[in-house]
Length: 382
Image (cartoon, rainbow, N blue to C red; front, side, top):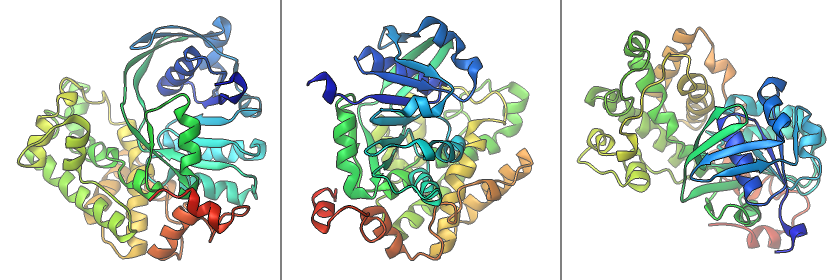
């Protein structure tokens, strides 16, 4: 491919995921700009001019630009990869809105639940009507960590990652652009599918809360999944999972069960969910968080469970167990996650029927401005 045809990337966030992604993309030969909100984290990267990458991909990755100026970071780029925790998506959307350019693609890695919908709604409040595509990945493509100043390690790269744009008929444009660098990205039906198959919503908050005393007394010195998810904890997870699937079904979305996800992801099976978790080799040895102020609560509750509950209430699907977990998280952290989280209002879904929501994610506001009926149909992914 001619160099000019290769996408130019901006990576937003210089945490574990952002450093790994920026470095890997640069090693693959792409022009990469790296943005971070604070100077402290990126100062050593700027000093070295890049990131030393270790693990399954190795080498010194020289970056095109390392900056705390988001306008400079995204200028003249084609794909903007947002790698921050989902709790930062709202601020990023507000900050990035005035600087977006025609034809750019923004991908949330991952979107958690409702990420693309919220991001798009914020751009709408800013009056942005440029041809910008907002998309979300179902999960993050790397297992990775920052291991030192200007150093990152990739432990593994997922074979398949589903991605969807809003509206869905733009998904193939996103996949085609991403596949130049990442053949692992495949199209999902729509953002409801990527959002409601966010299994972290089910496997993170409840086990953390139900193991809170053990986490605080041992500083997380036990196997989170293998020891922390007992038969009784599994029963709570199963009820939450049933509620998640019911809300997705009410919207016409394809949601796989936690059992199906374990089979698909880890080839783990059992006569019940508890046995399947115990048989997941990928969970062996993974320790619990060392305190209860973890992303498993402060990210997964407001950005994953709250939108499931809020949308469920709107479409007439009760979520009593999910609601209980949210309420306990609020009490433990002394934070009103109901207020801080992604509500139906923040997602731009208030007073919409399931049919209207499905039309929004597949076709846009009737059809997105600038596209004909034929173009929408040609780009759709069933």
